[in-house]
Each structure stands twice: as structure tokens, then as C-alpha cells.
Length: 175
Ligand SMILES: [Mg+2]
Image (cartoon, rainbow, N blue to C red; front, side, top):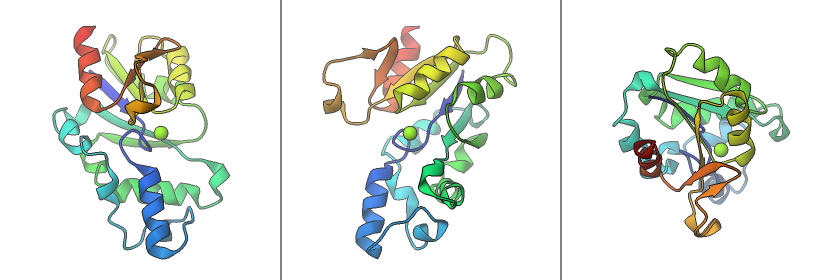
């Protein structure tokens, strides 16, 4: 089983991190400097490190999108955030990209053994649908960290909804 995981709002509580920086520094910009003196790893969701440690490092990938709308330093900011978060050591690779994730996921999956099951987790429905289209064999999970947002709904547009990483394991067990 291989896992390709989104970072922001899937593994990392970025809204809380950005709010904290704003409170601490009086401003927030998408620059690597904004993260100076910030303990970035405290904004990983509570289940992340323990869950990653239940998997083989060789099976774990992070695929994170850089948003050009956040300015010319958005890439530097994203790389700094990932490397400060301490998840880098727990995964085989971190891939940075822009736009939709379908093709990048299909590209990463080329290096996997044929028929190796693949799980993709992201908090954005458009990313899940993009991956479902480009890599139909992938099990796609929409991460909604706040269950109140979706109530009792367990699936949207054919994509399973999960609220934590243990929910991902439960879906795999049901396959
Ligand atoms: Mg995300």
C-alpha cells in the first residue's frame, strides 16, 4: 500500500498556524521569514506523526501544491514550512507542484510496482476528483478535519470523506 498525502489542512493545521503567526508578529506574509522563530511542528494535527510511524517510510509521499496567488515567495514559504514541520523525515519524498494533482499522482505512481494499491488523501474535492480521473485505481479520501462541516455525509461525488487518518485505515480495511 502506497500513500500520497496532501499537507495543508490534511496533515497540517495551516489556518491555526497562520493565525498564530499573525498574533505573534502582528502580520503574516507568505515568506520563509514569516516562519522564523515559529515552532511549525506544533501545528501538525495530533494524529499525524503517530499514524505516519505505523507505515513504512518507503510507502509515504507528500504531494503539496504551491499557490502562485500567494506571491513570488510562496514556493520558498511552502518548502520552509514542510522542512520545519518534521514530517519530511517520516516520508520517502515530498513533491511540490502547482495546480491539479491528478497528473503528478499518476507520475509518482509510475515508480510503484504494478497493482500496488494507492491511497490519496486531500482536503480539496477538486484535487480528489482530479486524482480519481488521472489514476482511477487510486482510493481517494477527502479529509474534512471538522466533522461538523459535513454532518452525517460520508461520501461526496464518489469520494469517501474522512475526518482523521484512522478513518483512512478503516476505509482500506473495508476494501
Ligand atoms: Mg490541502
